Image 1 (cartoon, rainbow over the protein chains, first blue to last red):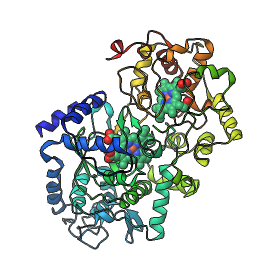
Image 2: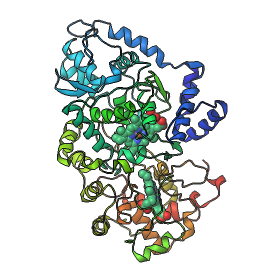
Image 3: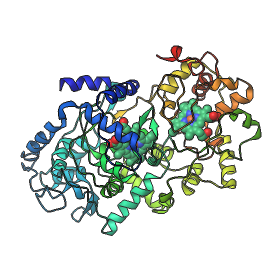
Length: 295
Length: 230
C-alpha cells in the first residue's frame, strides 16, 4: 500500500506523461491482439504493470466485499446471500458476465450496482430514502476538497463481479427491453450535448486519439471494449479506491458537463449495455479487480 | 491521427488567410459502420430517458446542458455532416451569439489566458467532485491541442504552437476571438466546444485573455520550450 500511495501522488495531471515514459522504459509489457488501438493497449498494460509484483490493492476489496455481502444488515437484519443477479437467488458464479439484463421484479434493465441496491431494499429492508442518501446523492465535495471517498456499493460490486473472473462477457440482446436499452446506449454514445458539445464517440470512437497526450480507448474496437469492461470494478490509483462501471460512466458524463448521472438510471444502464455488447464480441476474460491510473 | 484536413467552402474569404499554413479541419465523418447510430432512437424517447436519468438537474440546467440547441440538433441529425444550407444557417445563428468584451478589446492578458487554457475545472455539477461555482472556469484547451512547447497536449485538434506567427491584425484577432468564443460560427459541427455565452464555460474577458495567449509574441505559445515549461 505504501508503494501505491507514492504512485498515487505521482499521478498529477501534468506528471502523467513523464510518469508514463518511465514505466514504459521499465516495463515492456506484452501487447495482446487488438484491432489497431495499440497506443491505448500499451498505455493500459503499463498502468497494470505499475502495480508491481501483481499486487493490486483491490484484491483486498474482494474479501471485504464478501464479508459485507454475508453480513446481516439493514432493518431486516439479513445478508445478501439470496440476492438474484439474473441466474437465480444466490447464484453469483457467472452472473456479472451476463449483466445488464432485464429483471421482471423491477420491470427494468439493470446492471450490477442497480441490482445490489434493489436487494438492499427488498431483502435488507432499506428504504428508498436510505439508498438515495447513501448511494445516489453521495456527500457533496468540491474538486478542491479532494476526491470523493469510496463506497460500500463498490465494495459489494467488486466481490460479486469477481465471481465471474475468467469468463467472457455474454450480454444478450434477447428481448425488447434489452433491445431498447442497447439502442438508447448506441444513440447516447453518438449524441452531442452538454456544455462541451461532445459525445462519447469524440473521445472513444477512433483509434489513436489522445487527451493531454494520454491515449484514449476506442470503445468501438471490440478488443479494447473487452479490455476496458473486463477491468471494472477497478482499483483507481489516483483515488486509492475501487470504482464501478457506473462511476466510470458518471466521470465522463461529468467531464462533458452534463448533470449528475443517477446510478442505475436508464441512461447509465443503456451505456453499460452498449459497451458490454461490444465487449461480448471480444475474447477478453473478466479480471476483477482491474487497475486504472486515474479519474 | 485520422482527422482529415478539409477546407470549408463556407469560410468567409477574409478569414482564409488566417488559416494559411494550417488547413482548417472540418468535422470528420463518424466511424462508417455507425453512420445510422442517430436513427437507433428518436430524440423525444431519448429525452424522456434523460429526464429520469438526470433527476437532480434544475430546469435551467436541463435546458442549457441536456436539451439540444438548433445547432447541435442539426449536427446530431446529420452525424456532423451538415449540407451547405444547414452550414450557412449554423454560421449565421452562431455569429449572432458572439458577444465581445464591454471595453471592445479582443486581446486581454496572456498570463491570465494561460491559467484559463490550462485549467481543467469549472462547470461540473452534481455531488462528488462538483466544482465551486464561484471560481472562474478553466477550458482545458490542452485536452485537444498542443499549445505550449513542452506542455503535454492532445491530438484531437491541430497544434497551436507558434500561432502568433499570424500576427495581431484586427482580422486575425477577430478570427481567433470568434473561434474560441464560438468555434461553430466558423466550422459548423466542429468537435471543438463553444466556450462563450450562456451554457458554456468562459466569459468574454476570459476569451480575450486566451486570444492574448495565442497571439502575443511574449506568450509561451510563441516562445521556445525553456521559458514555457513551468
